Image (cartoon, rainbow, N blue to C red; front, side, top):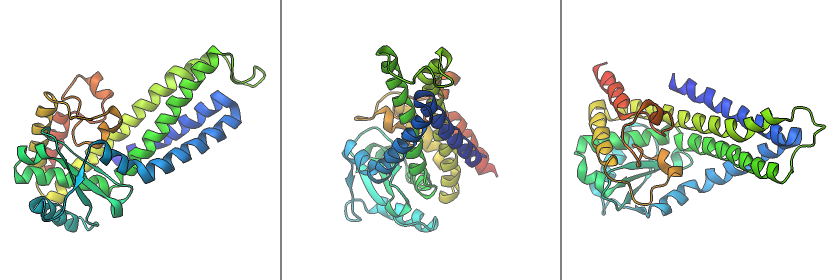
Length: 284
């Protein structure tokens, strides 16, 4: 169900981009925006992983430096029949973890020093299994594409605002124009793009939870880990964390549980709902 939802949301986001391009520049605008989105996706596909790792000062570790962690990742990767990813550690007391890499052959799992101290072995194994599931399901690629498309839509909306101020834009003789199109372009489209992007992110988290629970064989350990990580997220913000990279982490580094409206604009589902699904998975 979540995979189907992701497909539908991706299609909706692509359609929204094409529509925005048309509203801003007619048929020529559609073509230009499509080319821009391809360029942004290409750049993100090849370089986003290295950018994120540098942003958080993550350091790659060897079997000699982190033997238990490397053995854990290796065992789970073998069970998942996937290539062994590179393993990085982020020096931070705040417990969290993320995965990146453009495909399973270039996968990276990163954990904070805080999460290694806070969680027991089974809980950490559940977290690592969750992150490996992101790599296996190519979620980093999907999230990169979605973020790029949403970013282009927002960029066009900002350009349209300035174009309107200076009287630049589509000529009056082109069909369509008017205040309604302008409002859709400047207000509705960016909001819709953001909601779709966040919807995709939440769907992929549910899938990674379920896959990670199967991979580790212990969904309850992952559920326990999520509760611990969220507790710390409510009291501490991960240093260097940015909204643009929040979707990468296993728990949003900026906040814990919130209202339904807050969760609607969150990169992650509510931890309570994730825990409930993992407990149901364990009972099955």
